[in-house]
Image (tube, rainbow, N blue to C red; front, side, top):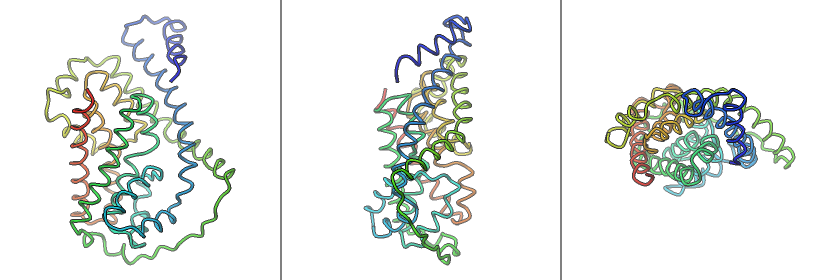
Length: 319
């Protein structure tokens, strides 16, 4: 991002407010102002572009496309489509039913279900702005990898009998699809961008605020002791902490940035974020409507193990 954002944050904190450099409040407030502006600018630009791309992949068209694929090819395509069609947990049940009703294998359906909330435009934008292309690229690769591998494993386990019986009895009608013009796509994308900003704006403020408090006030030695490289169990503990929490990338990534600035390894911090976004408790409650307990537990267990693996991988690759 341009340096003028940092200059503006410094101007507000040290000139207009008259705070002294090095003070806890000054450091926290400077962090907060700079990151809020940067994140909101990035979100506006990239969500708009992603929204236009996503307009070419309506749910019915996605189902038809994936329905023709089988085996690991379908898992790869489903995971990649999940990037540009990021549905939230509230969409999980109708999508799950629609995919299975269309004849898409369970493993392929689960690859899409994992990729869609895990790898999304908000997380990508914020990681890109806060950590750069290397971390953002590894995030996409790991998220897609988790979706592919977990979907293949779950598909090989032949767990179809643990889907609630009524799911296979529902017939989802195919909605008529009218191809929009580019102007309509752009208009819809701009409207959607505004809706997303209104929904995540508070999360951005809360997340950056929490990150600012960590950045300005939490001692480095305390975090390094309990979540640093010296604790071999830090990654699985981060995943266990993240599962019962509920937030989105907008609320967690600023905390990830603050944690890494305090010496917490990037893999440990991102494992926490991915557990919160991919394995949230509300999503488990919603998915219980279509999955029997054994399938739901297996789904969460496989994804959790994959996130732990990715956390250790990040810690080994990025130092």
